[in-house]
Length: 241
Image 1 (cartoon, rainbow, N blue to C red):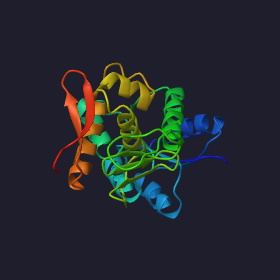
Image 2: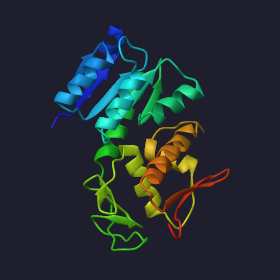
Image 3: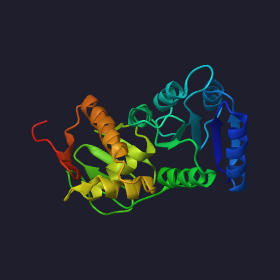
């Protein structure tokens, strides 16, 4: 089945270029000149992935991204922007983007990132679990404390209730739970989750962890994502919580 991509960019030449490359690669692309039209289209029919520019007429791309993330937690979103400062990258990822690509970029790089993000959104992993904090290998579920992750269904629950996650957040938790007996480096996470060489730009992992920590805290969850200074992260359970 053909996968659908919504694209919002106010520059027609960029819309046409991206559309041409994605269409050639087998995707069905609907392009919009602003983010508001893309958001309205998502409310009518959700695409498989959205690509959003930041600087557009009407509502800016970051606000559109934040709105879409609240309404559609599992929608894969790629932000494209001429803004390349560390603050802009972190802001884009904080507001719900799964990836951030700086203009100008090679269209083939965008296509590669689209494929990588869609694979993360669709892939299955092994894992099943009974009660307790140990993730046990099976074909359906991983368990860690009150958290249940069902990779094949792309479903997450906390204490039996749905726990909305972005595709990258979901894959991060699956990866960490499967490796709960050790610390995982930032570089390993970047290679595995983003499948892109970020050339030691570890801000993406740090921001993802901040976002997840906030979600877990708001849910009063005992799961802790510990920082291993100068290296990466480890997942654990806080006793008595």
